[in-house]
Image (cartoon, rainbow over all chains, first blue to last red; front, side, top):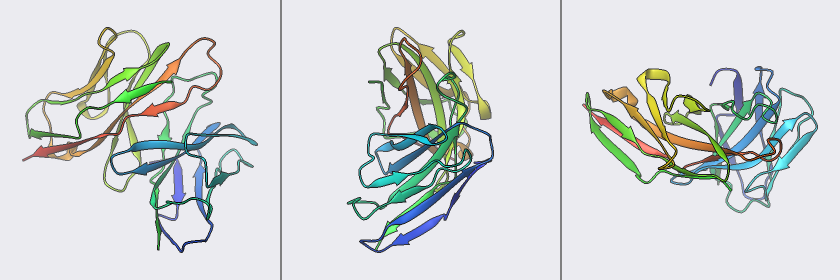
Amino acid sequence: DGGITQSPKYLFRKEGQNVTLSCEQNLNHDAMYWYRQDPGQGLRLIYYSQIVNDFQKGDIAEGYSVSREKKESFPLTVTSAQKNPTAFYLCASSIDDRGFPNNEQFFGPGTRLTVL
Amino acid sequence: AQSVAQPEDQVNVAEGNPLTVKCTYSVSGNPYLFWYVQYPNRGLQFLLKYITGDNLVKGSYGFEAEFNKSQTSFHLKKPSALVSDSALYFCAVRDIPLPIYGNNRLAFGKGNQVVVIP
């Protein structure tokens, strides 16, 4: 988990509220990712960003939003439009994956979001 | 699009016995293959990767994996399992079709729970 921090570790949200999950990395990586993990489903990509001020939708982007104003930060907002947000959220980063796609991703410790 | 299959939900093995976690993949070009491990309520930790070259890849904590192109497999192995190896293991693949730039995201399998019995 070194080099990537996620906060908070646990987050509780009432229905209808937006919440923002923090992800910070000090690895000087260009690319950052957000995944959602549900039991028995593996990891599903929500959004990714290959450079600052640019990001792309992943496979399950509906109900989520992101920003990438700084290289080291990639916050994820879970909006009220996300119908089933309770899950474990993982942030990851990697060296520029456009020119170096063989590099592994490094993961943060995760945030567990529960909707009450 | 690339995909990964990890056919077994759970692998049970006695401590000291060999451990194998199976992974098969599907890509349109050449695969870059990865194994990760996840302990409860933690992020994923990188174990090893296959890019090119020797089909047998050695990684962290005594793990290794064998790339088999004809069988499109990348099984993870450890000669002697430890109780501390009990965790969730993920295989992942990145498809690298030509041209190399573009959308080359990582696809993860659903994971295999490994239980090492003392």
